[in-house]
Image (cartoon, rainbow, N blue to C red; front, side):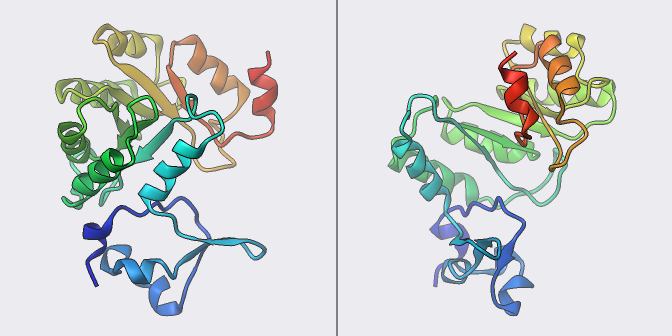
Length: 223
């Protein structure tokens, strides 16, 4: 059985996992691919096998409107810090899947807390956008993350949506360098995933907002 990192990347996006007690308490990095395939995600009424990164990329190609389908894939690392270490096999596996499935830069972007992981992927897939994620608490921290992304040759930053931190000055600073500002909301229900914050982020010029899509979002987008 080959180590997981040599087989491919596995997508983890759900909190509800079902597996034997042994698998539930074993760190993912210690599982081989065959064991990972026995982990199920979902709830009591519906469960599915964990998809691989290649599985998700294939879904993009099958999307009914493939031209508008775009995936933001997070490169997972060992901590939520810019200098976090990461599995060095991951960028190679990711690049291999992207090239094999003929995914275009219009269909896929990468985000990560790890600057090193993003730089490694950018080196292998130079035409794909890579955004440095930051969970920041003040404007100084936000500018540091932005400047790190710019200096590394990435395509921008992805910061937690906070109207006191993501200001028009910060957005303009990043835009002046030809980069983009993305923001994200916390896990649902999130205090920063509401009309007031959406409006503020739009007003300061944020390029993209990652939302949990609460019901009121449809009313906001129709305004």
